[in-house]
Length: 123
Image (cartoon, rainbow, N blue to C red; front, side, top):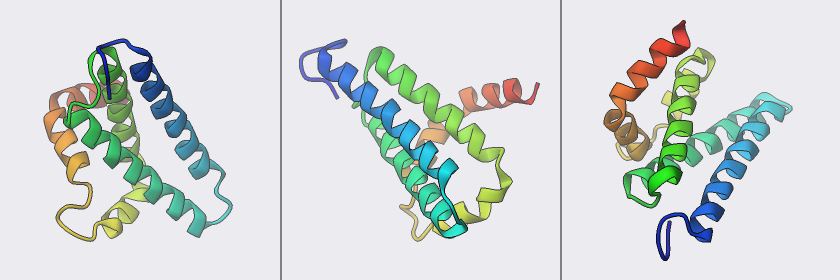
């Protein structure tokens, strides 16, 4: 997501957009008033994670922006793993082999970091 090189205004804007979207998705989930709205907000959150997993894998972020987006994605994955109430919703939301393809690829690519962070969270 860069036009003329690392650190340009476009990179910063995309990074700000990413974190603004994270906050919006997490807030929608936290403030959903009923189970149906919570489920909808959660699926939107998973879709958001999928899109940004694809962006990281596709090289659309570089440098520090890539690192920050990657780290937030990793923290989000660990948070989801530690929320068993949502696991059934995740399974039920898979409709084909390509559902969450990039999220799974991201997790595979970063499995060593995920393993290390899981250990840190457990302490």
